[in-house]
Length: 215
Image 1 (cartoon, one colour):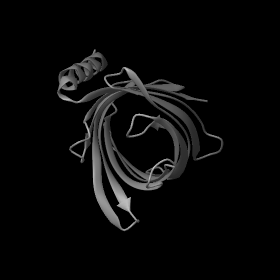
Image 2 (tube, rainbow, N blue to C red):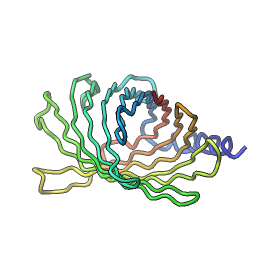
Image 3 (cartoon, rainbow, N blue to C red):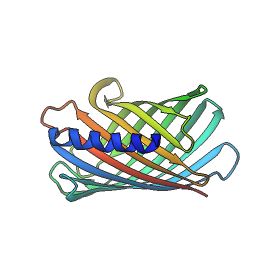
Image 4 (cartoon, one colour):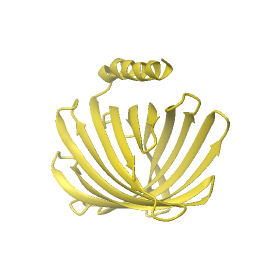
Protein backbone atom coordinates (compact mmCIF):
# COMPACT_ATOMS: atom_id res chain seq x y z
CA UNK A 1 0.00 0.00 0.00
CA UNK A 2 2.76 2.47 0.87
CA UNK A 3 4.44 2.29 -2.58
CA UNK A 4 1.08 2.99 -4.20
CA UNK A 5 0.62 6.01 -1.96
CA UNK A 6 4.09 7.30 -2.92
CA UNK A 7 3.32 6.92 -6.63
CA UNK A 8 -0.10 8.56 -6.25
CA UNK A 9 1.36 11.51 -4.33
CA UNK A 10 4.00 11.99 -7.04
CA UNK A 11 1.39 12.04 -9.80
CA UNK A 12 -0.83 14.43 -7.84
CA UNK A 13 2.14 16.71 -7.25
CA UNK A 14 2.83 16.84 -10.97
CA UNK A 15 -0.80 17.58 -11.73
CA UNK A 16 -0.81 20.41 -9.21
CA UNK A 17 2.43 22.10 -10.23
CA UNK A 18 2.36 21.59 -14.00
CA UNK A 19 -0.13 24.41 -14.78
CA UNK A 20 2.08 26.89 -12.90
CA UNK A 21 5.09 26.17 -15.12
CA UNK A 22 5.71 27.32 -18.66
CA UNK A 23 6.34 23.85 -20.07
CA UNK A 24 5.57 20.25 -19.13
CA UNK A 25 7.90 17.53 -20.42
CA UNK A 26 8.16 13.75 -20.60
CA UNK A 27 11.53 12.00 -20.27
CA UNK A 28 11.84 8.28 -21.10
CA UNK A 29 15.05 6.59 -19.94
CA UNK A 30 15.65 2.98 -21.09
CA UNK A 31 19.01 1.40 -20.36
CA UNK A 32 21.02 -1.80 -20.07
CA UNK A 33 24.03 -2.54 -17.86
CA UNK A 34 26.76 -5.16 -17.49
CA UNK A 35 29.57 -5.82 -15.01
CA UNK A 36 32.40 -7.15 -17.24
CA UNK A 37 34.90 -7.49 -14.39
CA UNK A 38 34.86 -7.11 -10.62
CA UNK A 39 34.16 -3.55 -9.40
CA UNK A 40 33.43 -2.24 -12.93
CA UNK A 41 29.97 -1.35 -14.27
CA UNK A 42 29.21 -0.38 -17.87
CA UNK A 43 25.86 1.12 -18.88
CA UNK A 44 24.25 2.07 -22.18
CA UNK A 45 21.23 4.38 -21.95
CA UNK A 46 19.10 6.16 -24.54
CA UNK A 47 17.06 9.01 -23.05
CA UNK A 48 14.19 10.38 -25.17
CA UNK A 49 12.59 13.74 -24.31
CA UNK A 50 9.36 15.47 -25.34
CA UNK A 51 8.66 19.15 -24.60
CA UNK A 52 6.01 21.81 -25.32
CA UNK A 53 3.54 20.11 -22.97
CA UNK A 54 4.60 16.68 -24.29
CA UNK A 55 3.56 17.45 -27.88
CA UNK A 56 7.00 17.71 -29.54
CA UNK A 57 10.04 15.45 -29.75
CA UNK A 58 12.95 17.43 -28.27
CA UNK A 59 15.95 15.12 -27.81
CA UNK A 60 17.47 11.67 -28.17
CA UNK A 61 20.51 11.24 -25.91
CA UNK A 62 22.30 7.86 -26.14
CA UNK A 63 25.13 7.56 -23.62
CA UNK A 64 27.82 4.99 -22.78
CA UNK A 65 29.25 5.19 -19.24
CA UNK A 66 31.75 3.18 -17.18
CA UNK A 67 32.21 3.27 -13.42
CA UNK A 68 34.85 1.81 -11.09
CA UNK A 69 34.19 1.08 -7.41
CA UNK A 70 37.28 2.06 -5.42
CA UNK A 71 35.63 1.46 -2.04
CA UNK A 72 32.11 0.58 -0.95
CA UNK A 73 31.46 4.29 -0.45
CA UNK A 74 33.46 5.74 -3.37
CA UNK A 75 33.06 5.38 -7.15
CA UNK A 76 34.61 7.18 -10.10
CA UNK A 77 33.56 7.08 -13.73
CA UNK A 78 33.06 8.79 -17.04
CA UNK A 79 31.02 8.67 -20.20
CA UNK A 80 30.35 9.78 -23.74
CA UNK A 81 26.94 11.05 -24.86
CA UNK A 82 25.73 11.75 -28.38
CA UNK A 83 23.08 14.47 -28.38
CA UNK A 84 20.44 14.85 -31.07
CA UNK A 85 18.41 17.74 -29.67
CA UNK A 86 16.76 21.05 -30.41
CA UNK A 87 18.81 24.23 -30.15
CA UNK A 88 17.60 27.65 -28.97
CA UNK A 89 15.89 28.16 -32.36
CA UNK A 90 13.98 24.86 -32.22
CA UNK A 91 16.14 23.16 -34.86
CA UNK A 92 17.35 19.59 -34.36
CA UNK A 93 21.16 19.54 -34.24
CA UNK A 94 23.86 17.01 -33.35
CA UNK A 95 26.15 17.63 -30.38
CA UNK A 96 28.19 15.44 -28.06
CA UNK A 97 29.51 15.41 -24.51
CA UNK A 98 32.34 13.91 -22.47
CA UNK A 99 31.96 13.65 -18.70
CA UNK A 100 33.84 12.52 -15.60
CA UNK A 101 32.39 12.10 -12.12
CA UNK A 102 33.04 10.97 -8.55
CA UNK A 103 30.36 9.57 -6.23
CA UNK A 104 30.27 9.22 -2.45
CA UNK A 105 27.67 6.99 -0.77
CA UNK A 106 26.68 6.83 2.91
CA UNK A 107 24.32 4.09 4.13
CA UNK A 108 22.40 3.70 7.36
CA UNK A 109 19.82 1.09 8.33
CA UNK A 110 17.02 2.87 6.48
CA UNK A 111 18.50 5.79 4.54
CA UNK A 112 21.03 6.05 1.71
CA UNK A 113 22.66 9.39 0.82
CA UNK A 114 24.49 9.78 -2.51
CA UNK A 115 26.60 12.75 -3.58
CA UNK A 116 27.89 13.13 -7.16
CA UNK A 117 30.28 15.71 -8.55
CA UNK A 118 30.40 15.77 -12.36
CA UNK A 119 32.38 17.80 -14.89
CA UNK A 120 31.00 17.70 -18.43
CA UNK A 121 32.43 19.17 -21.62
CA UNK A 122 29.83 19.67 -24.35
CA UNK A 123 30.78 20.23 -27.99
CA UNK A 124 28.27 22.28 -30.02
CA UNK A 125 29.58 22.65 -33.61
CA UNK A 126 26.70 24.90 -34.75
CA UNK A 127 27.06 27.42 -31.88
CA UNK A 128 29.23 30.51 -31.57
CA UNK A 129 30.65 29.08 -28.35
CA UNK A 130 31.59 25.57 -29.53
CA UNK A 131 32.74 24.18 -26.19
CA UNK A 132 30.80 24.53 -22.94
CA UNK A 133 31.98 23.19 -19.57
CA UNK A 134 29.43 22.41 -16.86
CA UNK A 135 30.01 21.57 -13.18
CA UNK A 136 27.16 19.58 -11.60
CA UNK A 137 26.58 18.89 -7.88
CA UNK A 138 23.88 16.36 -7.00
CA UNK A 139 22.60 14.98 -3.68
CA UNK A 140 20.06 12.12 -3.54
CA UNK A 141 18.39 10.63 -0.47
CA UNK A 142 16.51 7.32 -0.66
CA UNK A 143 14.53 5.24 1.85
CA UNK A 144 15.35 1.51 1.84
CA UNK A 145 12.80 -0.20 4.09
CA UNK A 146 9.79 -0.64 1.77
CA UNK A 147 10.70 -3.96 0.22
CA UNK A 148 11.32 -3.64 -3.52
CA UNK A 149 10.28 0.04 -3.55
CA UNK A 150 12.82 2.83 -2.91
CA UNK A 151 11.29 6.32 -2.68
CA UNK A 152 13.84 9.07 -3.21
CA UNK A 153 14.37 12.81 -3.50
CA UNK A 154 17.22 14.85 -4.88
CA UNK A 155 18.69 18.27 -5.65
CA UNK A 156 21.15 19.01 -8.47
CA UNK A 157 22.79 22.40 -9.10
CA UNK A 158 24.47 23.31 -12.40
CA UNK A 159 27.28 25.84 -12.83
CA UNK A 160 28.90 27.03 -16.04
CA UNK A 161 32.70 27.13 -16.03
CA UNK A 162 33.93 30.13 -18.02
CA UNK A 163 37.49 29.35 -19.24
CA UNK A 164 37.74 26.93 -16.28
CA UNK A 165 38.30 29.82 -13.84
CA UNK A 166 34.87 31.40 -13.24
CA UNK A 167 31.72 29.72 -11.91
CA UNK A 168 28.32 31.01 -13.03
CA UNK A 169 25.08 29.55 -11.65
CA UNK A 170 22.92 28.07 -14.43
CA UNK A 171 20.00 26.01 -13.04
CA UNK A 172 18.65 23.71 -10.34
CA UNK A 173 16.78 20.42 -10.60
CA UNK A 174 14.46 19.23 -7.81
CA UNK A 175 13.39 15.58 -8.09
CA UNK A 176 11.05 13.24 -6.20
CA UNK A 177 10.07 9.72 -7.14
CA UNK A 178 10.37 6.02 -6.47
CA UNK A 179 12.35 3.07 -7.81
CA UNK A 180 11.11 -0.50 -8.09
CA UNK A 181 14.15 -2.77 -7.71
CA UNK A 182 13.73 -6.33 -8.99
CA UNK A 183 16.47 -8.94 -9.35
CA UNK A 184 17.53 -8.08 -12.91
CA UNK A 185 15.89 -4.70 -13.57
CA UNK A 186 14.89 -1.36 -12.06
CA UNK A 187 11.91 0.85 -12.90
CA UNK A 188 12.09 4.55 -12.02
CA UNK A 189 9.16 6.97 -11.81
CA UNK A 190 9.81 10.58 -10.90
CA UNK A 191 8.65 14.17 -11.12
CA UNK A 192 11.16 16.99 -11.54
CA UNK A 193 11.20 20.78 -11.59
CA UNK A 194 14.04 22.42 -13.53
CA UNK A 195 14.52 26.06 -12.53
CA UNK A 196 16.79 28.27 -14.64
CA UNK A 197 18.83 31.31 -13.65
CA UNK A 198 17.88 33.06 -16.90
CA UNK A 199 14.48 34.74 -16.26
CA UNK A 200 13.62 34.38 -19.95
CA UNK A 201 14.09 30.60 -19.81
CA UNK A 202 10.91 28.73 -18.75
CA UNK A 203 10.85 26.43 -15.75
CA UNK A 204 10.12 22.83 -16.70
CA UNK A 205 7.75 20.38 -14.98
CA UNK A 206 9.05 16.93 -15.95
CA UNK A 207 7.52 13.47 -15.64
CA UNK A 208 10.17 10.76 -15.99
CA UNK A 209 9.91 7.01 -16.57
CA UNK A 210 12.98 4.79 -16.64
CA UNK A 211 13.74 1.11 -17.15
CA UNK A 212 17.20 -0.39 -16.61
CA UNK A 213 18.04 -4.05 -17.25
CA UNK A 214 21.17 -5.63 -15.74
CA UNK A 215 22.74 -8.40 -17.85
